[in-house]
Length: 344
Image (tube, rainbow, N blue to C red):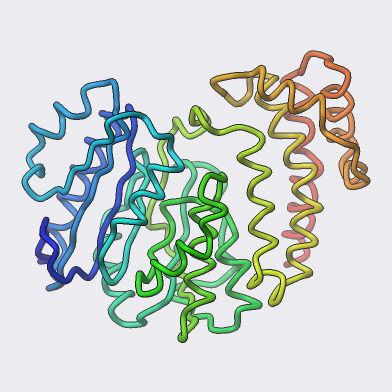
């Protein structure tokens, strides 16, 4: 069984949990981790660090009474510093061989911790990523069509797999170059995907650039995932494009970056429209409405006529319709169905 420590001794894996105002979800996650550690037969050292972003609910009370409390490192910010800075703070303080940032509302699958530790020990990857179910019962999105464990050393293949479905909880990363990576990516500290830029930097700095994919679904979110974070705005999604300007991306997979940019223009239109149509929930619809009015035209909108209709509606301030929102998904579904029927 892993030994869970709270001091500064050498630690193999640190599980870092940023949290804010989600007492029930955090309690669920800690209970799962407690069970996972108890069922893991591997002899190693783990630290679990919770960074509470000054939650106004009873998160602190729950932490004090949780059966796992004595084995947790708990940090509490004196004020809400924002989700992005809370994540960055965990990066800055982790001292371990590997770290796993785990969202407070995500759910590790049974046996996931044992599998992660085994994979880290056997392959010593720069980054381990795995399949993530969002949420249970939804259409599964895979890293290609492989099974089992896939080891990738060719960055032309590895980088797209790192960028695919950029979900905080699906990366376990070597911390050997973390300090230098943070310095190199500091200009992206307050952007939506600055944390993922740090992972790209770690790969860039690593002498052994090895990305391992576990094609098992090791975690999922819950059915509340469509309720966006307070800080999740159109700008947050646009910040993802900054990753495509990273040297490691431009050097190794320029065609992937070009195609991703083209897809993104339509994606941002659909995402904003979905919020204004009430299909996706957001804290401040006015931000999305103002952002939509300023979206410039792009030729890629003609790839999907419903996206063009949505863009026109956003620019003109026409009320969004849930029907039009869902219709924009049909061409993609038809294309996937056709590709599936011919075996691609």
